[in-house]
Length: 123
Image 1 (cartoon, rainbow, N blue to C red):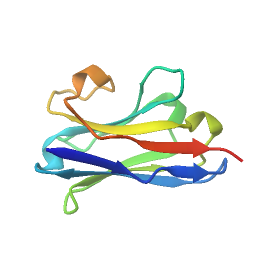
Image 2 (tube, rainbow, N blue to C red):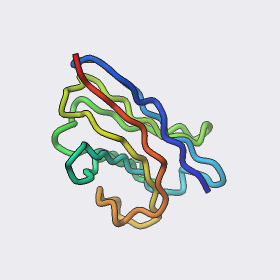
Image 3 (cartoon, rainbow, N blue to C red):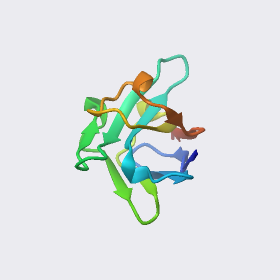
């Protein structure tokens, strides 16, 4: 069972990135999937999630309208499209899975974690 997060990098404010969370060893569509981030000196924060049951999506208020989470069942991958990036979005982003329902964006509810991908928004 492995989760591989990728797609981070350095981007200017207002730019975009697409993060990927690829699973191996299990079918990602059987799990709720969440994206979390941790900025230097700050606590981990739940950013977005997608429900395994009905595909409902969830976002923290600060990213609503800018980030979009989606699932590609054929590729066994969940994406986080991040647009209109701001310096305050700078963090290491992690994807995680849980079979628990309902989906909540609290890290303690998640069982498997990817290794993290760093996003830096700076001019």
